[in-house]
Structure formats: C-alpha cells, structure tokens
Length: 445
Image (cartoon, rainbow, N blue to C red):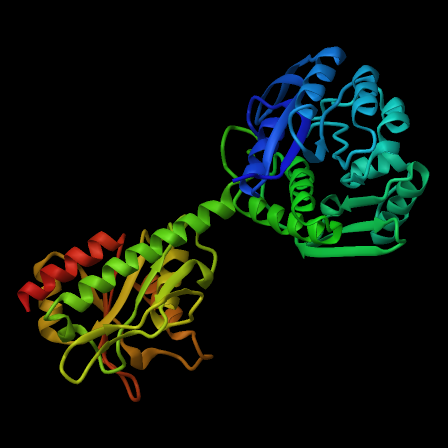
C-alpha cells in the first residue's frame, strides 16, 4: 500500500499538544503519511512554554532536503519558524510547493514564537499557498482591527492581495458569541464561509496547528481546496468537543477522536452480533419477548456518547416467531430512535454507568428471577406520565426516577396504562453482564 505524503515543518511541543509531533498524528488519522522537519524543541506543558531550543538554519535545511530527495511530498504545513535565518531556508528550499502556513505568532501563554515578524511577512507570506490565521494573527499581519464579519473579510482580502496568497482562511473563534465562522477568500475573488456552533470548552491547545495540518492532508487527498476547508473544519470541531482534560492548564484537543469512535462502534457491532447469537440459540429466550417485540440498545463508551448516533440497535428488532423461535432483525444500525435507545441515552445523560439496555416482557416471575440474582428494581406509574411530544416517554421515566428517588436501579418496570403495554427494562454496564444475567434469569424462570 502506498500513502500520499505530507510534511510538517514545526517545533516540537514536549506536551504533545500543538507541535510537529501532533501534526504527524493528524496526518496519520486522516490517511496521509506525515514526515517532519523540526525547527525548535520547546520545554512545554499545558501551562505554557518554559524555554525554546532553536535548530540551526543549516540543519533545518539538511532535514528538508533529506526528506525531499526521498519522498514525493504533495503538501507542506508550516508551523513555528522563529527567525530570518529559518525563513530564508524555507523560501530557498520550498518556494513553489503547496505550502499551508499557520502563522503562530504567539503561543497561548503569550510566548513569542516568530521573532522577526516583518521579515516573516516579507519572506514567508509571498510563497504561501494557503494562510490560516486566527483573528488576532490576521489583525497583526494585515493591520486591520477586526471586530466583526466585515472586518474579517476586509483583512482576508488585504492579506491575499498584498502578499499574492491564493487562499486566506481566517478562523473566527476569537470573535466570541454562541455561533462562529471561518472565512476563506480565494484567488477567484470568492468568499467562502463555514459557520459552526462555538464550543465553550477549556481544552483547546493545538487547534490552529491541527486545522492547518488537516487542511493540508485533505488537500493532498482531494486537490480541492474548498473540500479540504470543509473537511478540516469538521475534523477540528470534533477534536475540540472531545478535548482532553490533561494537565493543570489548557489541555490538548483530541486528535484521534474520530477513529476512536469508529473503533468503538465496530466493537458495539461485534458485541451485538454475539448477543444475537445468544438470543437465537437459547431455547427459552422467547419467554422474555413482549407483544411489541424487543430490542437491545448498546452504546459506545458512555463518556463519549453525545446523541443517538452513538447508540446501536437492531434495525428489525428481536421478534418471537409463531413457533417460539426468536429471530434478530439484523443489521446493527446507529441513530435509530427506538424506545430502548432513547432510554439508554437518558440514562447516560444522568451519569449512569450503563452501555446496554433491553426491553422485555412484564411478568411477576421475571421480576422475582431478577431479584433472586441480585438486581434492585423499581416501579414507574405510567398513569403519572404527563402529555408530551412523541419520543419523550423514555426521558420522562428516567427524569421521574432520578427526581423522586435519586437513583435508577437496573430493573425499571411498569404495569402499563391505557394503550401502553406493561414492560420491564433492564440495563447493564456492559454486554457481558447483559448476557450472563439473562442466562441466569432464564435458568430460574
């Protein structure tokens, strides 16, 4: 297998948040092989930069030339470069390449990361293909005081025109508000805007670096700058949402979150296939199937759950055939708004350590069996349920239990109401507990 190759030219962040080492991880999770030329080594953690050891310009040149002579590099992300000597090396070795520049003028703690800003503008900006400043950086480089969207567009156009940069993308997160946007102005004189919900999350170290690297990776794969902009913005949003609360300061974003969640969903599918095999091969499981049929809801790790798209169910339910044979309605799907999925989501949002929930037939023998194997149970009076919109019943049950009892036992049952079948709902921490508990139950009843 041959991957496309991208290069990062940046400093090393010893806290693994925003430097070249994190750029390599971004390249990797986006399917590009990353190579690295190091400009500096920082002594850094989540609270800030303690010191910087610069790489001599000639050694930086040796790194770049060594990589270029061996790899077909289709895009280069430029992060921290410190002084005129390093700037000139970049120009001499890389002019004409697809160069995405993240102008890291200052670190989050205020440490200056580009010493000779005038030389930086004179040497680096004219060879840049895509410039990705935030509001503060765009203002410093353009001289435009940015206070609103019109100012962003003005600064964007000015930077593009003065330095003949084909694409300038200004990230609008520093403007504040609940809704933010990034704006790109292009050599085709187009303005392209991407809006997104602003996330009030502390742990945002590495956002600028990750965005520029993701843009580079997506361009390498697609050769379409608009598409790369869109995909990089989507990538960044999820890395911020799941920011890592590490260290005592501003923790890093979670670069690996997308592949982590995909991996967890694959594990959920495997678990549910195992559960289906258990269900279809247990001769007594039909005793647990209610008239409305059954379904299993299984989530990824609860701390990563955000909505129903993180919860799997069987598309066609678990049904009892005329001959008491139990059939599982494969495949596993995510985001299916079943009662079991909604209740599991409500449990997780209450902080319950649960990843599995199933609805089963109401029967006093089943309740006694659950009690015998050690599960606490609680009854919900469905007659108390207020009128509300479709899909709110499961949330109401969990809210009712939490507000009135301060706890949510593993067994939640009701004896029904007009138009509502009596039901037992059983949740467990994981699939192994679910299977073993139901095996024990079926041996008893």
